[in-house]
Length: 192
Image (cartoon, rainbow, N blue to C red; front, side, top):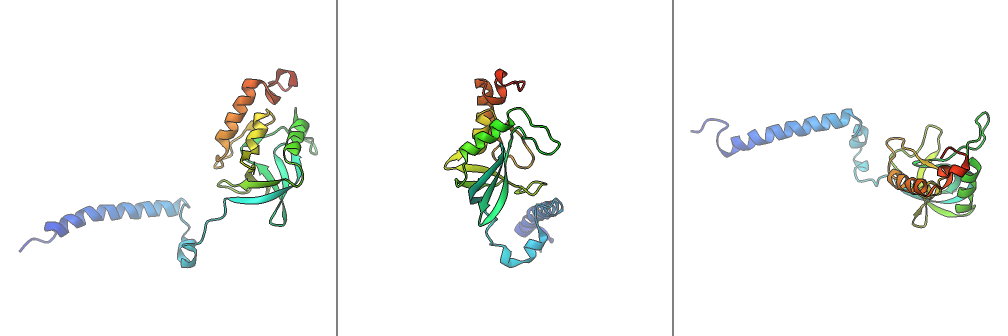
């Protein structure tokens, strides 16, 4: 008679038990870090539910400034902040107008006039602390966020974890800097 734990079954269990322990540890870490939502796992009807849409169609209502617009999304007016760019500000309350703020606003207004159909592409966080919808704004196949940066009228900005459009914006801004456009134009008086 063989001692218990010997043979194929014993070798199998000696290999499986550490693997099972590793999987349990990974599950505990994922739950503790918030990567797995236990409440969602308890509801089997949600197991195969589609993820939240990562895009939405919208119609431009008006441009607020060089990196913000109001759009109609499914019949609701929505304030949209273009992700991964920071355009110079207009005068708001006590905040002073920044260099090329009006030009950045005019650029975006010309690029996306009222009635323009756009696609809002979302990243990990869909709203900022001010309740604005955060998105990459596409008109056709063109990422408007990058166009504003390429004109030299916005700088790249990264607010983690939203980095989906960051590389395109950095490339566009680098092009503007090499060409001396907008904020990078010494004649602008913006310190470019």
